[in-house]
Length: 156
Image 1 (cartoon, rainbow, N blue to C red):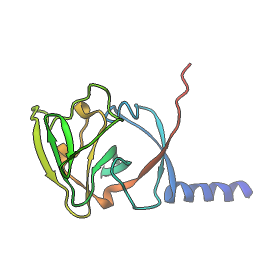
Image 2 (image 1 turned 90 degrees about the vertical axis):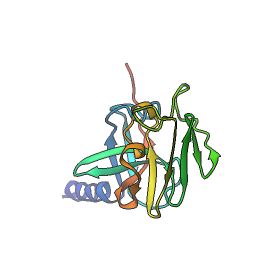
Image 3 (image 1 turned 45 degrees about the vertical axis):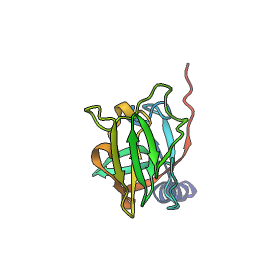
């Protein structure tokens, strides 16, 4: 009976506070690789620029992305450089030769205004990421939680 109580408490905690997820795809490389396991916190709602979050796009379709633009921000991409509210953004988490293009056609200049209650998100693998450049800003309610831990993969 103690095992049943433990399993019940673990299940409640897993859905309400923390959950373990597995990364699918390459859109967050080099920060997160396919099959990396992550711990996602569902507690709190104070999302900051550069937080990595899991967002729900459709029924049972989830993306892992990095918050770039907060509500009210003005995000620009000019000649592969990212600007928020007129200031260039240092992005040490990107691969060395990573380019931030505007779209699949290679446009080098674009701008986005982030509405109140919404966020602008990008993948770290900018040349291989479906993100706010394609689907637009995301609503606060689409954020399932913030990535708080990445389990280290042990290689043989």
